[in-house]
Length: 116
Image (cartoon, rainbow, N blue to C red; front, side, top):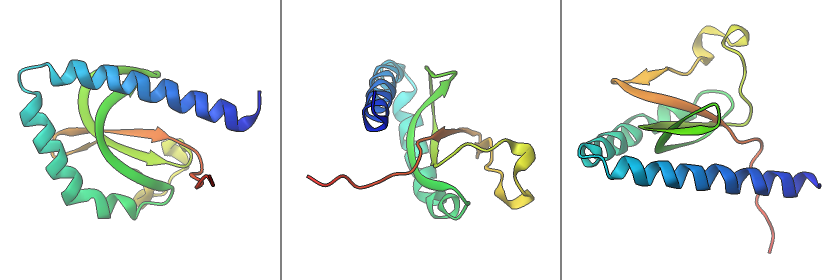
């Protein structure tokens, strides 16, 4: 299977799992408050998070653990490549939580524009 096809399938699987988890989280009674709070935190901290090396995006989402959605709302930070904490410098380690909200780091590889 070609590299491009593997990436496409990985993205489709990731987004289908994320959509299912987000739907379940939205059905929870406190989710509207959580959604608004997380959106506000993203707007407040996005520029700061984008200054970390390797970070290519920030969004609101559902925390993933071992490739499975947990249903827990979080800030999602997208990186080109996950790097073990031990190999990162003091100012390169992303926070685990921001104002009590979990931060989920998701490796997405290099992002390239596709031509039509």
